Structures are given as C-alpha cells and as structure tokens.
Length: 256
Image (cartoon, rainbow, N blue to C red; front, side, top):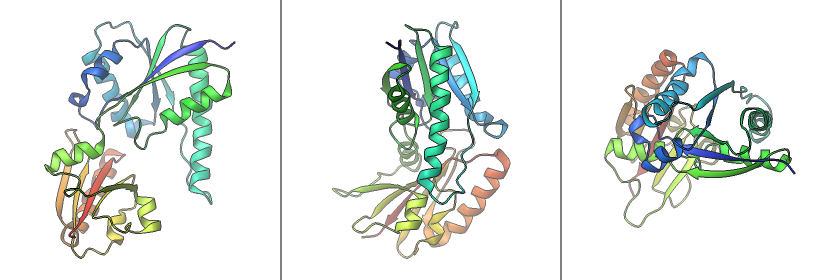
C-alpha cells in the first residue's frame, strides 16, 4: 500500500503578508516542507513573498523549502481546455515526484497558494490527480485565504453587489466569448490578459480596477468605463513591462 502524506494548501492572500490569517499561521507552523513552483526571474517577487511569509510567521526555522521550475503554459493550441489540461499533466508529474522524494511518511508538506485555494487556482485539482495515480496517498487540508476579489472591494471601499442582487465571477476569456451575462449588474473579472473591458459597451458602466493588490506596487483606478478604460490599459501595459508579471482584477458595475 502506498505511504500517506499530509499536504496543506494554505491561502496566503492577494499580496500583503498581513493577509495571512491566524489559521494560516498555525498551519505554517505545522509544515516540515514547503513546495514552491518557480515561474522564472520575471516572477521572482512571487517566490520572495512566500519566503517572507515563512520567515515572519514560522517559529521553528528547521523547515525546508523545495523549489522546482514551473512548467510553462502553452496556450496556442486549438483548445484552451486542452492546453490547460496538458499543463496540469506536467504539474501532476512534478507534484508526484516531490511528494515521493522530498516528503517522508509522517511529514507535513505545504503549498502556499496565492489568494484562496478554491478560486481560480489549480493546486487542489492537481493534488486530487496525484492521488488518483495511486503511487502516493495524500491527505489534503485546505486553509482559505483572502482573495483578490475581497482585496479589490476593500481597496475601493465598495460592496461587491447591490442589495439582494447577485455578483457574477468570470474570466476575461469567458467574458470575451459569452458577453455580459443577462440579469447581472455586478460582474467580477479575473485572469484577463487582453483588457476585455475595452470590448464592453461602456454606456452606464463603472469599473473598479486593481493590480498588485495589497503590495507596495498596488494600482487602483475607478470611474466610468468610457472615461478610464484607456488609462487602465496604458497603466497595465507599463506596469507589466516594468515588473514582468501582472495580477489584476476588476469589477464592472452596470446601473440597473
């Protein structure tokens, strides 16, 4: 029978080390090994924040950090789902190797997940796939974190939806393909590398946009979509070129 390992998927918030919850601090102090997927020099900030969190909150410095290169995502194929599936398969192989070779039976491993593990993150799906392969049994515990959506609303000091109204969360890709969902006044958009808000009819629409939320590089812009769309597009392009990566989220609000 394959040996069993405990894995903690710890949400660490949207970028501010102060986003780390008391529950997450307790989980950090249980872990023997932290697994970090390195996305290369352009995204070194993402690794550095994880190290900062460990150094700030962990009492016993005997923990280990294991870094491995994250396989690149190739999204040029005919199917986005197929491309992501191939990327996930590569990650599954890496995770399985890490758990078998870098985590002894009885030890606790951890992945520090940007934002919240349940929202637009692949960690939990990949750990499930590793378990399905059967070479290693994994007991997964999930510690929720502050998502970029929560950080966005707090930074702009707004509620995400009207009284008794729904809020819809989607991606830039789905917004471009499907348009604005009917019956929705408040639309949160994530993972939008194409500035899809520029394709939306701006009449009566307000945008609340934020990038690098919770970090010293945080950028916030809000206003009528027609008035601020070009500014957001320009600021986003400049910041991405300067830093080498971009995390941004926005809320589109239509007057009902």
